[in-house]
Image (cartoon, rainbow, N blue to C red; front, side, top):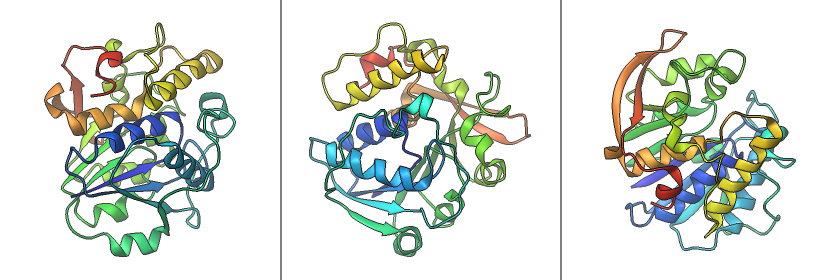
Length: 264
């Protein structure tokens, strides 16, 4: 089984990738593909950040490929006030990365067999991967009742609404703003223990919220990883967003705060 992550490498993407890779072998994944897309940062910066993050990991993990999408047109922002000057908290040095880097079209042509798909950024390129029929499709994006954070929408939805609408027609689980803005996931008041790289990333994201003025600190994309690993921690319900898209939304019911489940 392969795990595929589409990430627009900001801080929450870095946290989610670190979490997923740390547990990937025990979760039964033989390999992981990191598709660096435009969103929080332009695609070329997402690619650079994926390389920096992978080089910084200090634990064993399955084989990783990084997928370069920078040749493809994609809408993107560069949210430095939220994600730092390099888009990923300025936490990482640029080092040689122990992974293959392949162009998107080459990667897509080689994508075969069973895989699970996590989309953690805008969905501009996700429809191509959905054509390959993933066993599971989980995404972070959308909002139902929570106040939007980007031009009247949740960011990943608002950056490319047409792609979002196309993707949610497939069987999915949505980790929406409503899922993530759970009081137990808010680490803004106390932060988390810095026992490892994941803790450093989470606390960096928290510190950035004091710069950006965000109300609360939620590690959005990592909640999608938590659902992938622990679906029993969530219940599911159906709801329509403001564009009329029908979403299957995850609601957290486990009852432990983020700091206690961060490494699980």
